[in-house]
Amino acid sequence: MSFCDKIILKTANRSTKDTKYHEKLKHYSNAEILPIGRNHVVTCCIVLFVSFVLFVDNFFFKDYTHILFSTSVSHNSLLSSSIMRDIMKRIRKAHPMLKTVRQILILACCAALPANALAGGEITRLSDRQAVSFSQMIDDAGGSDVVLVAEAHDNAKDHAMQLDVIRSLRAKKAPLAIGLEMFQSDYQKQLDEWTAGRITEEIFKSIYFRNWTYDWSLYRDIFIFARDNHIPMIALNVPKEIVSKVARQGFASLTPEERVNLPAGVTCDLNNPQTEFLKRSFQEVFRHEANGKIFANFCEAQAVRNNGMALLVADDLKRHPGRKLVVLTGIWHAVKYGIPERLTNIGNVSYKVILSEIAELDASNATSAIADYLVGR
Image: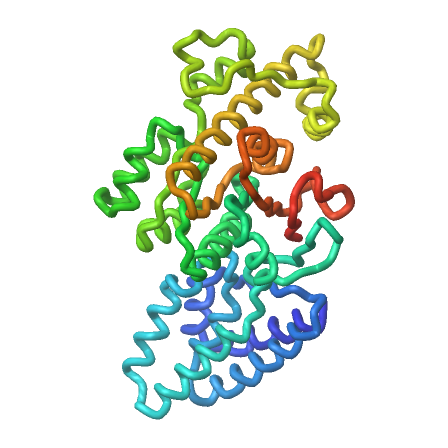
């Protein structure tokens, strides 16, 4: 355990003797400690400052300020969480002088957190293998037409990072939209209704589950943020019936009607080194395949989705010049030989790819040919 971790752990646990506080802490954070990058001297300085704040808080404010630092920012949205509402409620009830001091301490602590702490791990710029801050990554990505933020669909930290990217780009005041693999293109109307605030969350959840099988809670904060800030959301995925048919029988099995809105002649080049990399990554799945047909169909299904989503991305950029698009999609679509390669073929579209480490792609083998930034777990 690092020095910084010990300080955070100690300060987070200092009031656990108080049963009421302990229950609140469990309720708010499940005792998860904020993941702060460990390789920067500034981190320890900030942690020492936080420790001082918690020391003052122990005498004046009982139990609330340090919940900010014992709750994982990667797990809950800081500014929209029940924690902030609870804190502000207590502030309103406080003595005027203590109220002012408390507000200053909370704002100072929030501002002091390094931006790369929000990303949940060290960030590597793959072009030169240099460690960069979250804000540096955002400044660079913000200059592109498209920012692809990859996800392992069931990983909450990946979705927290996606929201951090969206929130940070939104703060730059540039026109912004969010592209979603999670929604099929024929559900665009329902997405528009959601971002316009015309349907309830319960109704929208039922629509969500018609499109996607992963737990709503993994994506909820992203959808709520988009709705509350009126950020357009773009349904990018190819209808699942078409993808399933290609995966079973290949692209050639599609009828002319099914090929409408799909690029012509989708194929999977099995001799392409990037395709070979994909095959090696899924070698456990395809170990017992017969004559390569199973993988070929799988690869064509991936190609259909990559091409289809790239076409919709390019179409959105054409219809809304000057508007940036943050694309949220699975890792194997976001990597450069997925959607980005198709964007390059379609037209002059600039992009950046942000990838979180996974077992198959980590610091040992991820290169700038695969992504622009790698975020450690």
